[in-house]
Image (cartoon, rainbow, N blue to C red; front, side, top):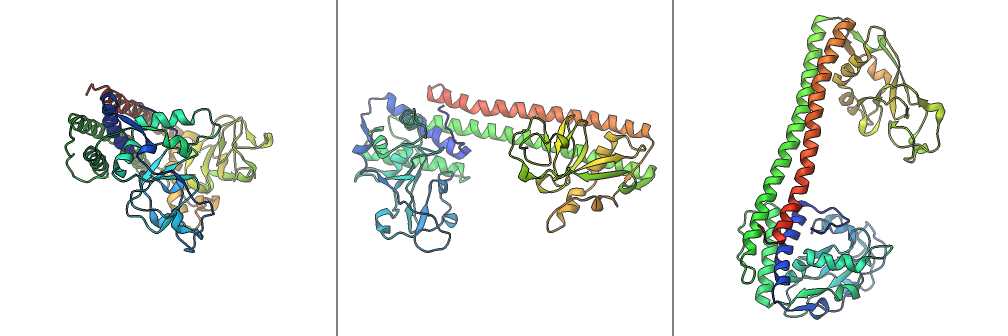
Amino acid sequence: MLKLSFKQTNAELMVRAAATVIFGTLRRSITPRVSISELTEQPQYGFTTSAILEPVGPKFVRITDLQDGKIDWDSVPFCKCDTPEKYTLCEDDILFARTGATTGKTYLVQQPWPAVFASYLIRLRPKPGVKAGYLYAFFQSDNYWVQIVAGKEGSAQPNVNGEKLSSLIIPDVNIELQDAIAEFLKCVRTRQDGESQELPELPPPLTEQRRIVGRIEELAAKIDEARILRQQSSEEAYALFSRSRANRFMALEHRFSNRPLSNLISMASGEGLTSRQMDGAAPFPVYGGGGLTGRYSQFLFEEPKIALGRVGARCGCVFVTERKSWITDNALYLTEISSDLYPPYLVHALSTLDIRQQANQAAQPVVSQKKINPLIIPVPPISEQQRVVGELDALQAEVDALARLQAETAAELDALLPSILDKAFKGEL
């Protein structure tokens, strides 16, 4: 199946697969073909202006508003337009992204708001006697995309202009078959959106294609189910590990003395290195967020450090740095550890504490040593700490192995659907 530069949703992929099966059959049959220009009016480019959040005029539809074959009208901005009638969207208009990463992506206008379309879009309107749904179905197929990709090759910036669009070749079928194809693809989409609806019959020469599309849907659903189950099993394994570790430490709390972290560790933030000094280029790993500009060798740690996320998405998360790494001021790192603690044991102990939840109770979640100092952990003899770490590390290794298996299986499942589609397009399903 043809690969595109932008990611498509499962629903879009299924519609594309169904359209490809149908138009692949028409292409192999004796169906006559014509250019798009024979079935549509002259292409029209959109209105050039800036989007405005305030309702100063009509809605202003841009490329970014075309998502998953839909428009979220509530999120579409407005614009000032002195001649809105020239660019007003109407029922059965078809919009094309004419430049950028999503070049060629289309949208069929249904029940539009008072809106105009932006200059990076092209509008096509079907001629009398031509169904917009049929044209839109064609624009979902690989037959269309092969022509689009060929038309934009060699350009520094991917683009499709009105002339290229008008020259695309499409099967020329009667109005009854146009209607049947449009309704069939519409049904495929609604089924992907969760509606319970039977696939409609298709007239010759597409009678067999209904069964093939149904079979693709069935196999795709099984692949999706397997992927979800794999993901759930991995998540449940990590949750089980976390509960098992927490239970072990609860048991230790009843058997051994509990001491506050203020008596066991000292911490500091990441040596004043801020995100404003970072741009993503660093020869060694960076902990706390961002990359580094320059070398900042005075802030490079030569040995692994135990650290906690101080702010941001990793606030409260515990991690161990690599041998050579930077730690930014978005993280805290341990400067001193009591001789009563085995460092790997401390990592597990810190991970059982609700540091992240406590931090999130604040208006602006921040982890500080002041918040960490009162927290207590059990401190058994070093030999007992080493025994606990050995058990937890062995369990962690099993969970990590399961996660790796899940990732490998997910990759295999991702490759399975294109293989099924390829067989479908060759008539092997």
